[in-house]
Length: 362
Image (cartoon, rainbow, N blue to C red; front, side, top):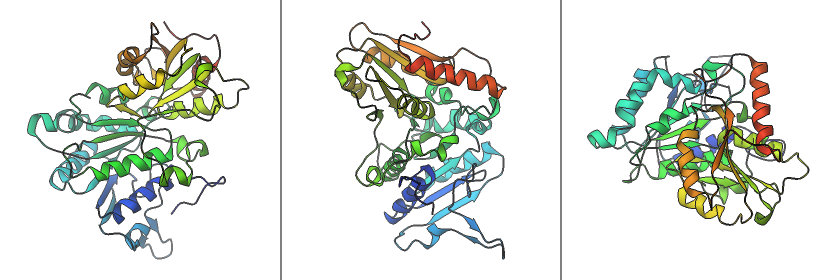
């Protein structure tokens, strides 16, 4: 099992292992498949170990004394359509099992898009099929080019309707722990739905995304998170920047290094669908001197969550305020191919979001 970080916090991979262990102890079986799922695409997952001397494999979760259910993890071939279809079918006919499919880089889900469109998104509406399938799709802009940046968040949001599934992009390890446990808890309930999670890449080991033990033992999943570390009072806030996932984490980290951020609040939308409209609307009411609301994202303007969240944030905004966009321009390709251009664009987006008197795209 992964160790604690240097500051005593628990990182993403450790949180996942703790979630799996607690779910097994509660009596819920777990099945995890995908390319390199035994070790994780980024070698972050230590739930299947290999003995370099005799070649034998060992999983700590197979020897968990408190476990009351089975645990299975399998690497799968690069045939995403077939594998995802199989896991969906497995879950429909074994609804008591927490079934997870992981795409090696989220854009590998491109090859399985027909399964999302034809079966997972509309299975309940077309055939009354209930599914609690979890899809883990690594997503985030780290300068790795168009093929390894975007898990196509916009596609899942475009298919979101009639409470057909949950789409999440999380900003802390504890949030991941709690959403997995929540999913396992509702597997046998009427409200069970598939769960799509945009998982991190570079943030897997970043301690800014790690969480304290208390956030696991005493916390619960939050559909949106208001930044508390900036030490401000609501009445002093003049600008709110909404973001999600990796960019929300980076904005919080960058804002924490600035001398005066009393005028700024960063809110991370963790569960994008169903959108937490009522909660966001109520939260905005306490910022009585609010002058600006922005949505910031890494993805081009015609991708990511912007077109989905814009009407919802505008409806929740108080008074005559409207939401302004900060991010990349509309593009045909999901990301730049040049890491230097990528880095400059990332800096522009973050600077625009947290620098006073900067404006977004009208």
